[in-house]
Image 1 (cartoon, rainbow, N blue to C red):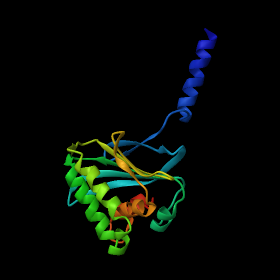
Image 2 (image 1 turned 120 degrees about the vertical axis):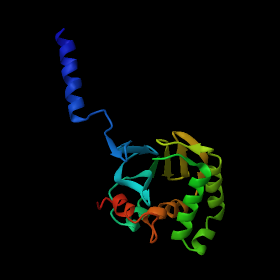
Image 3 (image 1 turned 90 degrees about the vertical axis):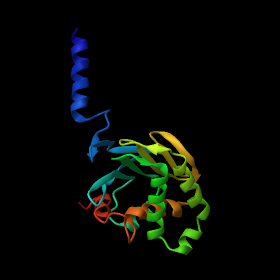
Image 4 (image 1 turned 135 degrees about the vertical axis):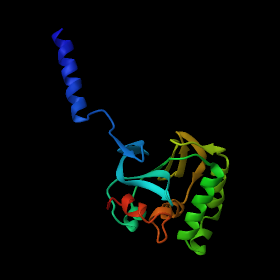
Length: 194
């Protein structure tokens, strides 16, 4: 009996300290873990925010890095694995997602930069075309895994093949962190400045 009480007390103490349980952050009503494990390394939330178009909330975005970075250059130069999680706040088609990603990449890279990973751009676009529709609450994780490449999942299921070039992963991040971010209020939030 005393052993059972002691075990319950230890379990309660561990829960009170947050041991053994991932903490969640709320972004636009969606819950995201405050850490993510990518390629065996624990990443922490660098920043998070909501992409708004006019007055419509489109998606929640969380950037995970091995260590805090508060400039775009710092994020792009970050060594090791990285992740961004995009949680949908409304229903969209895969085609709409793909077009939005491509428009953001085009706006924040020049022709010479895009020419370095033209095949990866095509594969990236195809991955979204193969998603008939994504619903509110669906989560797309886009990871940079050293020695593997850009790896994408939708609700934990792989989308497309790994894309090898780190420059491509950074081009995707420039959608939000580039000189012409798709949502200027989201950029400082991802950099943890708000």
